[in-house]
Image (cartoon, rainbow, N blue to C red; front, top):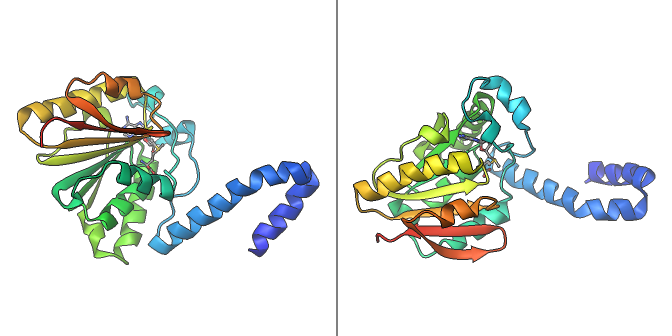
Length: 230
Ligand SMILES: C[S@@+](CC[C@H](N)C(=O)[O-])C[C@H]1O[C@@H](n2cnc3c(N)ncnc32)[C@H](O)[C@@H]1O
């Protein structure tokens, strides 16, 4: 808290009282998020630009389609999960397309998904994710159900069974179309339930156009889709 007060005083000198007042909610959110991270034994806060991550994957085909790393805020993740109800996490594999440092994977483990897969393009973020899962495992045995893959989501093939596919605006329409082709093949190969939970749905039109999916729920900042199988 002392650090926070010192920061406020310094910024008031720079930006004035009104300038600082506008920034305080953001700072407080950052403090809350860091505290929740600490409680889980992880460090997933902050933003990492694609240019910085790209040093660890310079030849990747979909570099220019990637969105920068930022974790989904804790309350927004829980809002997304509520919006996808009703479903029983125990019957689904949770897949984070663009897993970054692994925050959503840890939260999914706590929700009771028996298998959790995180796909991350960049080796540097993948390494941060592995460190976070290892740290979380020291506190919670449910971490054992988390698998982290360092690969391009465009070439990932989902496992059998019901799928809960989570996207926090990870990439553009080019990669989304390739992911949807793989999900449609999974849908056609075997009857199963596929839920798509999309936060910050910048490219919702691509999901809207997928013939095997129906819009299940829509609200500001998120979309939930599901296939017709039950
Ligand atoms: C906005 S962050 C989301 C992080 C995480 N899912 C969360 O909710 O905290 C998007 C992530 O997608 C990753 N990404 C971008 N393109 C990708 C691709 N083609 N394959 C796998 N991951 C990708 C980025 O490196 C970044 O870590």
